[in-house]
View 1 (cartoon, one colour):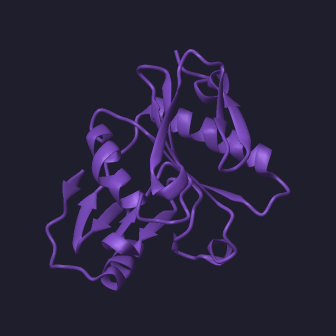
View 2 (cartoon, helix red, strand yellow):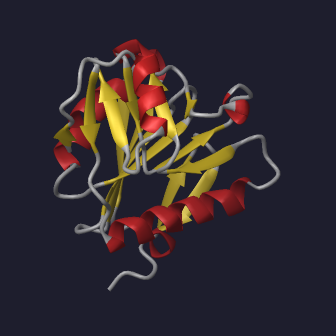
Length: 185
């Protein structure tokens, strides 16, 4: 991610400006950062996860969103574009530009974003009381790291690697690793 040379933005300025841009930008603490394009493997894995979640959540009040929907984390004055999100919140169902209360956020790691996804983004996402799980997908290692919020706001790490199934209790869905990594060489 690269910082965009611009005047200091308010959140409202960012939203208006972002609507006019051809490329996506994330926003944090009045600074705007250009997002790089995703690689083929990244797109395939994100789509596999979103499609599987969509199929399993059909008929429920939960909605699956992909990387073009922003997530507002007002507590840290930020907007992000997670790879996949699920929200069961009624207010989010009517959102136009951004969600505020997802229960599940998934990021597919890449060399250029891994440290950011593990650090700054996870720290921001933890500020949202609605998030029950934060999932990191490591394509190279064929591993899923699932951080689950437990009692008193602590987070528990569950790794799905040798396991054939990754359970996501936040949305009551199980996804096989074969489904997540389908189509990759």
